[in-house]
Length: 290
Image 1 (cartoon, rainbow, N blue to C red):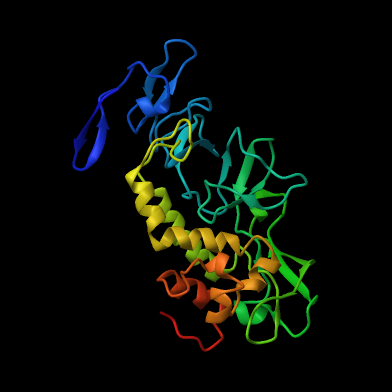
Image 2 (image 1 turned 60 degrees about the horizontal axis):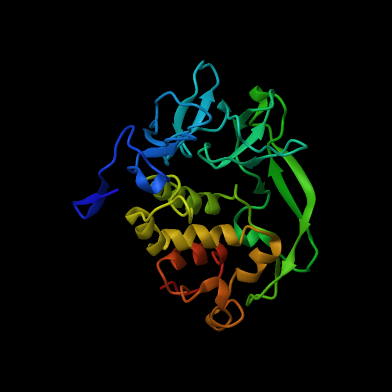
């Protein structure tokens, strides 16, 4: 395969039905498929009819919205809360619980009805609001979450308290407090995640980008990785792993950030990202931002 450079982007010389061995041999918008005599086929784009086996271009997923009769490519993180969809290969938790979904605007859904049907719902959030509300005087204090797990689709906004899911943990902070874990549904976290996911979904990269055997280099991916939003989403997700991970980073000072928590901050304590993460995790503490 050969390529030409157009506007500083390598454009493949292959196209529809061109012979290929891997996805690297096909244009950005194509997939190398077949058992013998493989060929490049165009991937359907957002709004176009699709199949489970082929799927969609990288910024969309093949799904069926409630009321539709065809599977269509649906843009990542575009489906609003309360909407029902069907996705054949989605892994759903048992027993039913709110889970991560790449289709939903808030990144979460709840399994309902048929084995492949889900409803976009808000992620679990803390009952206490703001980081100050997560602070506890003693380690091991009770943490209460708000979740939406009503089995009926029409009751998706019904909230339920869930206590004792986790307890507060001590970390490396300056205020001698223990902290409950931040949650994906907490408003400050949602703002960071929505911004980052929006930027991520706009990348014009092959869906196999990053796959060492099938994926190829993508300039948009490189730009995303080099930008603050890449560090932002990576680290925001990192502190959501557990209450201990949250407690370890809340209200760090520079000394802690450059020693004990150096693996987390990776020299970015004063980056533009800090304006988001320190504002979130130290919102009630007087701290100098970059």
